Length: 245
Image 1 (tube, rainbow, N blue to C red):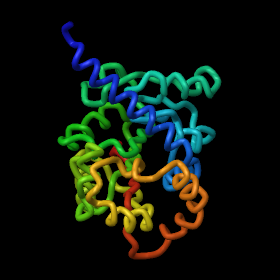
Image 2: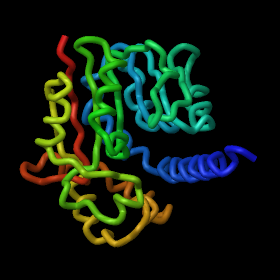
Image 3: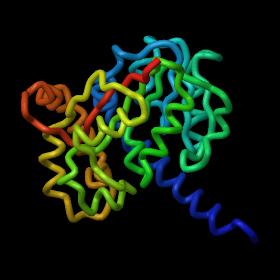
Image 4: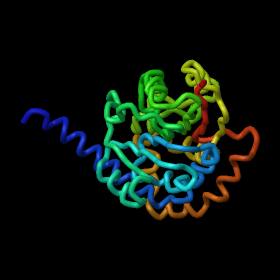
């Protein structure tokens, strides 16, 4: 049947992603940690790309007017939308590798893309699409894998084309009319652990059992304190960028 192999591949990818989201639900402290890096800079109407089941959204939903959640998995989107009053959160099933026509002429005050842009070989084209769906003076929040020298087999298995350093990320955004409001390293302890698993050809989270994920969740308040130590580089970079008016 025409299209069957492609559909089977997509269904398998959706199942794998769904399973990963179920595993990551064991880390509520991790998502609160992520949101703490940018939640105070959110406002108005937010578009979150690759939102999954909304684990980060729950940590900033009370600060904004509405959230438009975009993901490729319809089951996760249905789960997300059902958690909030009508009109507070709406969703759309969008393949971000496409032209984003599902978004129409929607423009957000803030676009949040966490662990997304590194999956695109042409990251400049991705940023161009962000600009089209942002109001003048709007903001973009990016969380990306940090430290290009850490790139290894796990990144390849995760579909990462690159890891980012501060200056190249800032240049990428500035070349599209953004100025950098903040850029911070996150999770130095994770960067240390990443080095010891560099030969594993799988997603980083899959190298942890559910029990270890629960232990990590309990340790996160202490691990987060390392973000404040000057000079320590993390596993991730979190940047907030503002578009010129």
